[in-house]
Length: 300
Length: 300
Image 1 (cartoon, rainbow over the protein chains, first blue to last red):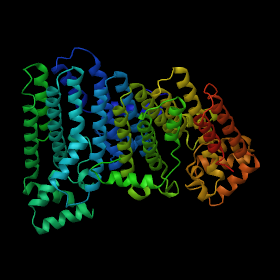
Image 2 (image 1 turned 180 degrees about the vertical axis):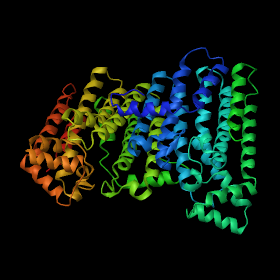
Image 3 (image 1 turned 90 degrees about the horizontal axis):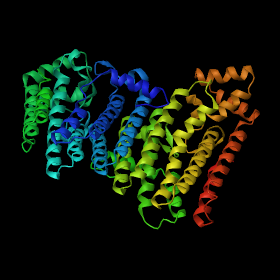
Image 4 (image 1 turned 60 degrees about the vertical axis):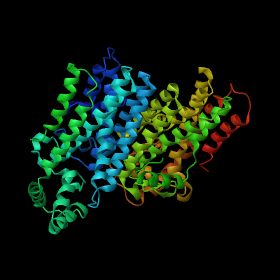
């Protein structure tokens, strides 16, 4: 993250200090070792994965006008939207530079393709925002793009540096993709069920922005005409009063949508674990299985 | 620019319809043929160069809150800042995907490095904005980053696909870099000297944003105390009345700063032409020389 332009390491230091789970680089490291890789290339590539993720976070926070990220003031709130857009661009470019230094065209192909898919997912999210006619299929397409594609790439790269056959690369891709979907389902449930301190971002952000997530789609589908009118007003028209979030949470409880969202996440989590069946037991395999449980246990 | 997410080709179609000079891809095409390259790889790479440029334009217009681009409403004005940020990210990623398909790590290295340098230049521009203590050296660093780096990469890539020795790659890099500086100097002069229709963007944008460009630095350096106070008020404090742009133009005329800026551009243009001395006369060499004249002749 170094640069002679001081604002870049300054903004980077803010991001590093804010912490975060570093889940995606952990996936690359674990997947590589699971595949018996003994070298050190996986650490640089894990950093690339985290850089791509960080760049998308910087741009997301600009797009969503978020004030909080990882429990801290977001970069755009401190340094401004402009700095966040441009430092995000720098991190994207730096990630690709690091990959070029690594020298594998196959790794470059996987991560460039993931970066394009992330952007497509984010654009689709923008398109269906505030539209209660959006479908579960569209929602799934959004989260497969904006979240699961990078999880899949992060784990797939592990098989590629270890020079394993396509079958193993695809198994790890499937693990990462299903884990990523589970992760995002839980994230979307947390936006309606977490307490502020636990979440590290503002509770109800998705609601205020009129974002289409599974809890909203399920509550809408299960609601009567009056409830449907409520969802249209708050999500489509974005006419919200101070009491509307509390009422939305009440409707979600009535229809059990958080439980249903978590149940779906569990299914994807099971598919993720199932994808690892071809790998013999090892500390790395157990770590990857634990990560699934960790991601889902975030909703209590 | 294709994608199943319709907003992406829609926004892309807007950009394509808006035209533009397509100067950077022209540089890649001409440089490759100048180097005797007979294949077709240079067309794909020229497209990558234009994609990177387009992505930076999309993000620039968000950062600068520009309403006009190439004489048309800018993408952010029509589709919103969020779409511009995200489609810009998509184009960056797509450019890198196309380069991976091309398969040359050397080309990837050159263009990834240019992308990082562009972002650094843009961040530095943000940092020195509204600061009359900024120096000519800092201004040069900004334009070498935000503009000249991609010109240099665009021409250098031509030598690389043609498998020419490092010496030729460096000569074409030097041509592109000096042309890029000349081009940006002229761009910055145009912001104070063009008529609206000619410019294709809003005249006085740089002034209103308090951007530090050579015309402003020269007018400030050559001004008396009262004039310096004027520049501090309008650029640093951004306190501007309707008459201030006209007065700024009057000061610039008094001190001949547009002529001086154009003279500097001419010097860089001559260095660009000088960099081509090792290449024998050919239609491509003449085209590259003509491009220098074309870029400088934009100020009448």
